[in-house]
Amino acid sequence: MATSRELLDTELLRLVTAGSVDDGKSTLIGRLLYDTKQILVDQLEHIEDASRRRGHDYVDLALLTDGLRAEREQGITIDVA
Amino acid sequence: MRALSHLDVLESEAIHIMREVAAERERPVLLFSGGKDSIVMLRLAEKAFRPAKFPFPVMHVDTGHNFPEVIEYRDRRVAELGERLVVASVQESIDKGRVAEQTGPRASRNQLQTTTLLDAIEAHGFDAAMGGARRDEERARAKERIFSFRDDFGQWNPRAQRPELWNLYNARIRKGEHIRVFPISNWTELDVWQYVAREKLELPSIYFAHQRDVFRRDGMLYAASEFVERLPDEVPFPATVRFRTVGDMTCTGGVLSEARSLEDVVDEIAATNVTERGETRADDRVSEAAMEDRKRVGYF
Ligand SMILES: Nc1nc2c(ncn2[C@@H]2O[C@H](COP(=O)(O)OP(=O)(O)O)[C@@H](O)[C@H]2O)c(=O)[nH]1
Ligand SMILES: [Mg+2]
Image (cartoon, rainbow over all chains, first blue to last red; front, side):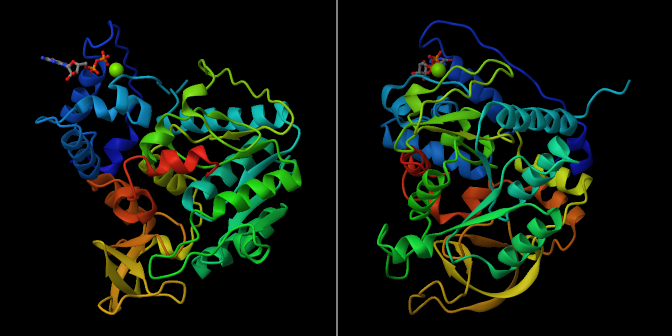
């Protein structure tokens, strides 16, 4: 676990993905967030629930970037902010 | 020259945004809840405009169900700054019949605030309302622009957001419309705490560990108060808690904590594995898109 002092020295990291629709850009970003431990317990529980509700038997990490209702209904990223 | 720290970068971004609002809009207002994010916003406004007065008043949407410590803090802080406070009262909206009070143990004035806020924006002719919401709080907030456009009815349409490239902000609106502006969008909860520590900002006492009577509901600890009707099995007991967010007493849960100083709180936040709203806010638990739905109709 990082101490607050170490966290004070962090820098912003900018990440860009490019690819066609459904190439897995959102899933990749979600996976990177997950692997770097940026996802807190309740956020993970939330997307586990949301994945189950969508009938998936896996956790759809793209739901981390695709948070708006329309994005989830259509399974696409509409907006990046 | 020393490189800017990440807090310096966030601070200068926020100051730039506030100045941009003051330059581009005629009647801005700064929304102030008495919480840590709004307190940071006040400091940023000081940095952006002092020695002049703020080019906008400060507005609190007062549900009447606040923690008393927060109201006390609000009045004192605004007086210290010598700025103008506008209070938009939910009680008044109820008295005027604009909204109906909910009843029962789960009654909350959280939703009612939207009407009070929109009425006040219209009555004062505000065309830009700055708020302290952050992207890391909630997934709908994460997708909202820094300059977020609201139509004639105060509504947000997430599918009709304007492009916002780098630090180029578009504040153009037509009569009757307004923008919401979120200068600290890109801050995290930990950034806010680190900034509070760096700037030595005073916070309402409820942010630090203290003893109070609480009761358990839905896995959260709520302050026992005259504003919340308790169910028979919701028996209050004393506990040492602190609050991570400041909302109504009816929908804000406390967390068990021994963190009595700013340093302790910063360490606690750095080590937490639950988000602040996930841990402490009932208003987001209603449905998958609870915040998006509230924002669409004009919520903060
Ligand atoms: N088999 C496989 N499927 C993937 C992989 N990454 C993403 N997907 C699936 O591809 C689909 C589109 O993914 P998404 O991340 O939404 O794509 P985007 O449009 O590029 O953001 C989803 O059904 C994912 O579950 C992968 O590495 N392997
Ligand atoms: Mg995508």
